[in-house]
Length: 464
Image 1 (cartoon, one colour):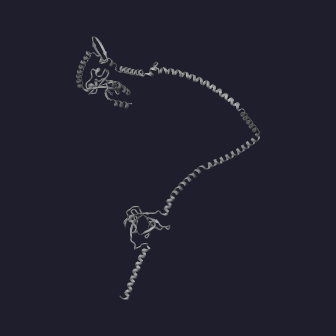
Image 2 (cartoon, one colour):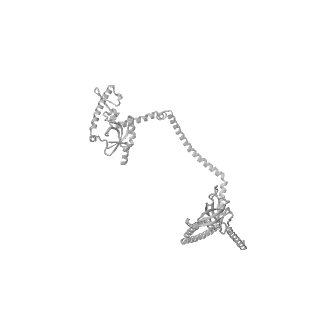
Image 3 (tube, rainbow, N blue to C red):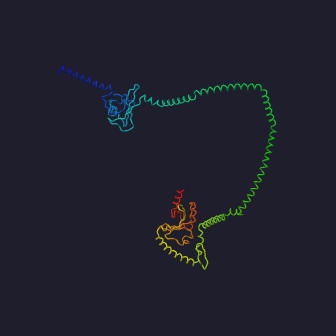
């Protein structure tokens, strides 16, 4: 090889060396070490607060990498994509936060990695969570915000206080205050004048005051010297008042003792069972019998009033005389047989009558029906019997209730007793009826039609 060729080869090596040194020097100035292996990660930020390429990435203040690329993304709502290279010696745990912060007072920005406590790690090329540290201005504003609010509240209070003061100290108020001060001044002058007058009076009357004080001193000395005599006087008065009180109290006690003696004697007789009161106290049998008799008499009078025919039921012709009885047990055997034969005849007659009644039309039944209540009124009854056939001889089936009314509803013959228009009387009548008819129950009658008791109550309530 000629010397000329060697020279050109030498120049070529020198040029390559310069290019290599320049390349490595450029990245060295940027903070990159081309000989050291790194892993790349990406972070999305809405704003980067002055972060530049080649800004350092630290962990707890220790540099572990640097920012290598910042890309503006208009298609993603103008976000910024930051690429960082981290030494492969460091593994980033999942959910690591990359926060942009101010590294010094000059505002140099860097990225601080905040590791999580997770055991798994990010893979190279993953996207980290991005945050931006508040600026000094934001921090100051955040700290000053409560003070600012308190200052504003204080200014509002001061404004209201000044408004109230202005309202109070208006022209009229100031005029009144001036008058008040003038009046106070006049009062003080008057007090000063009065004090001067009192002082002069004390000077002129000092002798009289000295005499009065001397007399009071003499009087108190006299009372002190005669204290024993005064005590005797008070003792005598106390003894006299006690005597008067004792005399009155003694009289009262004597009268009370006499009254108690008489009362004790009366109580002894009552406890011994003497007299009517004593018998009532010692034995309540008489009281119970009187109460039972009164109740029986009340029921009897009530039954006689509403069922007079109940007590004269049977009229039997016996050897030319009429026998009136109120109890079947009083009948002789022959009379009882005669009554049974008559009852069988009545039953056959009732069957024939029932067949005839079934053939009659409804209009004739309504025309011949007896009216028990005025039109439009509600009456209450106690229903004691219901039968398919009419009961002719009511003295046996209806147990002497010969005044029971008969209502035919087209299918059944219903027999009702104790008419009344006050629902408050229903329970009483029902108790009387259930003594003879355990199955009795209350009903209501409206326009010759038997309805339920509750329906009758509802119609009365609606009418009222």
